[in-house]
Amino acid sequence: MKNFKFVISLSLAILYSLHLHAVPPVVSVPKLPKNLRNYITDEKKYFEVLLDYYIRAKLLEAQLGVDSIVPPLSYSALENQDVKVIKNYSDIANTLYVQIKSLPEIPRILKLQYNLERVLDENQKLKYQNDSLKLLATESSLCRKLISLRDSIIAQLSVDLSECEENNLTQISHILKQRKYPPTLAFEVKANQWFFENPRVDTYIAPSFALEFHLFNLADDILSFRFSCNYTFLTNLVETPIGDFQIIKQTYKDDIWNFTAIFAVNLSRMINSKSFHWELNLSGGYFLGFTKSPSPFVFQNDYKGYSLGLQTVFSTFNRRVPISIVFGGAFSKLIDELTYDGLSLGKPFIPNVFLGLKFSVLNSF
Picture 1: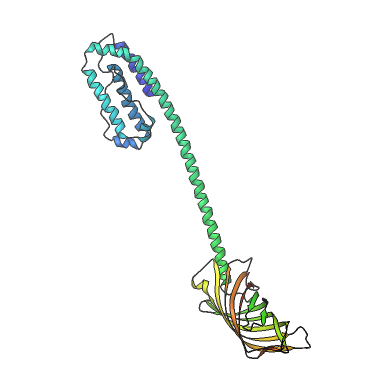
Picture 2: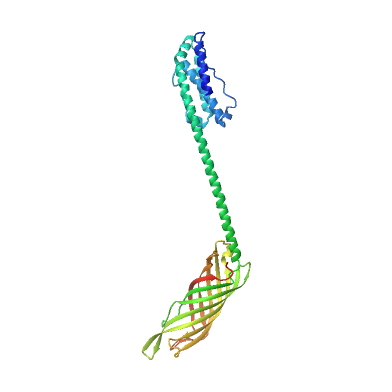
C-alpha cells in the first residue's frame, strides 16, 4: 500500500512539472544491496526489495513507451525467493534508465504523458496481486498449523505406543519370573497309540492321565527334575485260536500304571525366548499292567516292565490359560510274559506315540 501511494504522489508531481521543464527518468535505479543473499531467509524483506525494482522498471518502461520488456511478477518467483529474480529486474530497470537518458527531452515528455495512466493501471493490478499474495500467505500459515497439529498427534501416538510396549514387556517379564520355576503340580491328558508286532492284536487309541510333580532345578533353571504318575486305559481286540481251525475275537482291557522320573531341558531359556515356553523331556520309569478279559472268571493276567520316553512341551506365556501342548513317544519293555488267554506274546518291546495337553495346577498364577 505504501508503494502504491508512492507511485500516485510521484505521478502527480511529474504531471505538474510537465509544463515547467524537461523530464528526466521518472525514477532512479539504486544499486543492489551488498547483503542481498540475507533477504532469502526473510520473506517480507525479499518481497519489498523485489517489488521496489519491479515498480521502478515498470515506470521506466512506461516512460520509454515500450511494451513487454518487464516480465510480470509470478507466484513462483515469490515462493522460491531466488536472488536471481531481483537481479533480473534490477538489470532491466538500469537498461531502461540508460535508454531514457539518451532520448531528447521532448519525446520523453510526450511519452510520459501518454503512458502515465497505463502505469497507474498496472500499479492497481499489482495491488490486487499483493492482496492475493497476502491471502495465499494466510492459507500457507493455516497449512503450517495443520502440519504442526498432525506432527503433535503423531508424537502423542508414538508416546502411547511406547507406553503400551513397556506395559507388555513388564507383563511378560512378570510372567517369566513366575515361569522361572515350572509348576509344582501339573495334570496331563493324552491320547496314546500302542503298536504290537503280532498281527492278531488290534489296538485302539488309549486315553491316559498323569500327575506331574516338580522337584528341583539346576544350571540356572535350564535343567529340572520331576516325578510323574501316569494311568493308561488300553483296549485290544485279540484273535484267539480255539482248537485247530476256529478263531474268535475278544476284547481285552489293560489298566497300566507307569511311575517315571523326568529329566527336563528348558530350551526356551537356552535361546533366551520371551514369547514362548519350549522344553524337552527325557523320562524313564517302571510300570505295572493288569489285563481283564470280557469274562472275569475266564482269564486275568498281571505283568510289569520298564519304559523309556521322549517328549516335548510347548506353550505361550499366558497366565489366564496355563495350557501346554505335549507330544512324543515311548518304548515299553516287559519283564513278564504277556498273554491274552490262548495267545501268548512273550516279552515284547512295545513302542507308542502320544499327543495331549498339560495343565498347570499350582504355581501358575
